[in-house]
Length: 535
Image 1 (tube, rainbow, N blue to C red):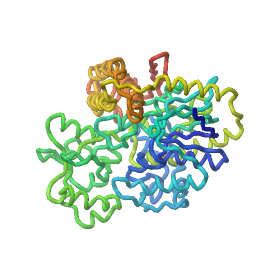
Image 2 (cartoon, rainbow, N blue to C red):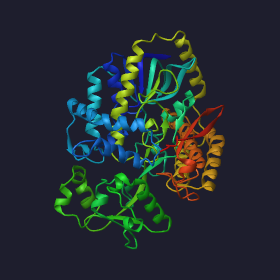
Image 3 (tube, helix red, strand yellow):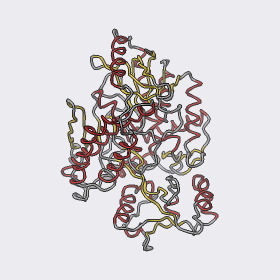
Image 4 (cartoon, rainbow, N blue to C red):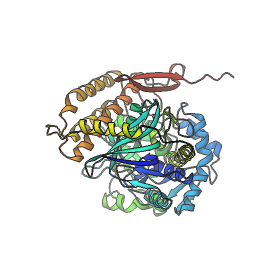
């Protein structure tokens, strides 16, 4: 059985993972990055709009700070927000030193990639730089377990689903940067493998997680019948006209005034579209009035013009839109340098919660990957240089490999795991999505419990791909429970969390954060109010 030795194991090949790997390598650590796809490819960074929000060109750090906190509805970790707004400009200029080409605007920096992968230049530059600096990578691997001894990380166990074999990793530290769980929802714009693995790994390792009820939906997703789901360039929501099938102006109807609406009003805009659909009315974006000058003012808009106006016939008709699951604000609880509650375990990027509060402002996700990926990698890299290898770790890892092989035996059971995952996605979309209430959340939790007991044992594992899919289903069931349990506990509406039975924010009872952690075979939730400011 194979055991690979490295100072630091980075789990995740997106922007946060690659920046963490680079920073750790700069400290002299040996770094191995493992991911379910080749480094940089098919990640949220790669498929992103390629835009950073940052204090440049007339947007001050004070304004960026205020906007981020305002969007987060008062439950962000202020210290993390201050770090983000102060350090993003340096990290972006560093990317240009690596070779990234982009355009600077007021409060924005945008990569010059093309939809639907405008973030590809960023991902490619990070991957090339990491490889040049000596970061090793191993694709097509899902990490299934973090291995600890006496509360300290000693490695991990994974599965190479191309070769169909288990692998163990002996390491002094692990950095979790495997992204979020947006692909668990029925409608989403995430890579298909974004199944919340990092949340599940941290949970089973004993780390607390936070804010898992806050799941963001982006409003301007293409919903044309027979056409692929894709994200329409956010600036077009302000440039075009948003109407329903009765011709009503949606932004006026719901009094959505904060602009840009697809950046700063994602929560209220998504909810408005969802309500219209629930009442039997479709929602459209009408781009027919845009002039040549309008199309030329933004690189992302320019890049989508032919696709929207010619291929999708947006020049002759409005295009139907619908919200898609986009981002998880919640995640692992860390300090400002990515340290978790487990010694030697760090986390960065969408895997971490706290920065964005109850809603994320557009453009802060890529900034987060670079600022906190760098911090976690730098801190872990400096730490491992001072550490000795754990005694007895080889034997422990061999034991975990044996356990893995006993559990994941080929099975010709009658239920393809992809069908279980689809069922989870439908439940999350219907009951744990944009509009929630107690009866639906409770019903959904009951359905997940039955699926775990009845459907999961029937999942086929005849091929390595089906083994991967069943592993993802196990994680999906756990992450879905985190979202639903947290949403059920928070009896108010705040940011992206909207309760039909508690439609207003309640600062007296709920201005704070929900934390959860493993307790026995279940999970324990705890609400922690924010300290009251006495003037």
